[in-house]
Length: 368
Image 1: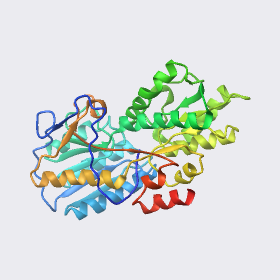
Image 2 (image 1 turned 60 degrees about the vertical axis):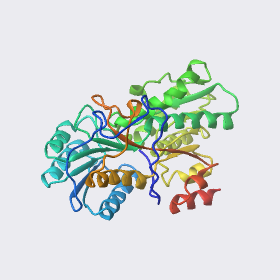
Image 3 (image 1 turned 30 degrees about the vertical axis):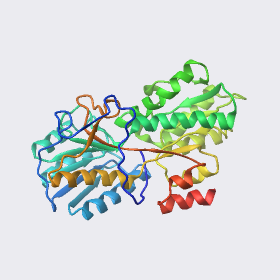
């Protein structure tokens, strides 16, 4: 969940949070694929359904980057009604068409084992994009923002916002996570809990509902209506009368807005709510102080990083990759990764953070 179109291609690899912190240039753990790629070859891009703004932006970003690099693009979205079988079929079709690289933003990273095996057998390079592909050795590379860091930043923002808006604790807080079929969702949540659990343990934060495990707080399909319904139920059960709801950990902007809709309807109108993706609908809310924060993950930068990786391979170069078990272990292997750096955005730094992105910078300036 993540990001917006903006010029500029910063590919800073973050050093924090890795267990090993090492780079790889073709070692056993870091080598990707021996596949041969040349300019003019077909590059397949399989994306999930268009359930959030960032996925819509991703298709356009990939098309431009692939064509500018001299390759042919086959970009397909899964259908929201049947995302897994749809994406499985699309990837198989890309292989049949002769794609030399397949870039996959997985609808469900646990259900693509046979497809990525077939891609590898065909000689294609397999690149997991934005979301890791789970429980398979047949993934060559992973291109994504450091999603454990995203979770940490969200939790840090929540604590900072609570202090600013609510004074000294303890604070009543509820937790939300993304969808269990998205490999990133647990990484976001684990990163956040790395920061929040000590505060829960020492009593600074009280999760009134007692729901603190990923299984309890996940949001199926990343769907706004599911988050809004759960928030409504939580308020009804645990926050009746004058019981305050001070803050909510939300994993992305779509869910943040749904949570805020529920809290407003229930008369709990001023909680500190986090987010992610810098969606255009959330920037005015952040500038108005309604939503406290978001995370900026530049879609164009992320798409370009994957295409740059393919370009390097076409030139016979071994890309610099990071071996980061905390962030990039898929259950079978730690996938060699290009990690990009997420940016925490609040009202205070929004104009600077979005500099160069005409749309987001304009929204931020309008509310400043």
